[in-house]
Length: 200
Ligand SMILES: [Zn+2]
Image (cartoon, rainbow, N blue to C red):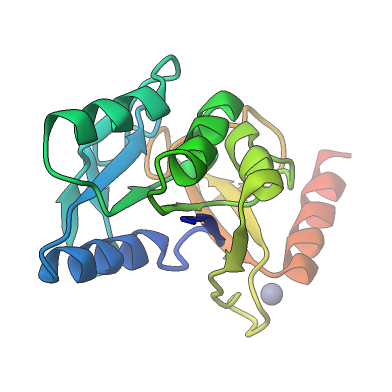
């Protein structure tokens, strides 16, 4: 039986690079993939972009109302078989779409590999990743390091170069003066305490 995989990691840990590599491996063997990207991630539009300067166009730019199970099912009915479904920025899926991808694995018997964040900049969950963490047959962490050398665990948000810990969940990297930095938990809470002290 095919499985649903959730490969999570912080910002800049190489998730999109890993996705593009897996896609390449399938295609090199003459197999077909479908790459899905949630539409609310406007970075790179319909492209999956790796920091290593490779990119690949997404086959499905999914809006919140899209039924991903039906869309994949329609594709295999119309065309050649699909050997793997790859999802970039999977934290932005809806809960329902995570369930639909689970069904792609168990009913259509196609492996689904989702790449995304585990928590947002406040250390809260995203609807998509919360559901994927519950449903996935396999959960793997893609690791990267904090600037202090410890394993990064948090996605700290910076606005105009300063760490901020309040705000809306969705703010795309590189837009509206927002950037992100992967920090270990110790550094995250140290910067958070500093920001709170400055507010007082
Ligand atoms: Zn650190």
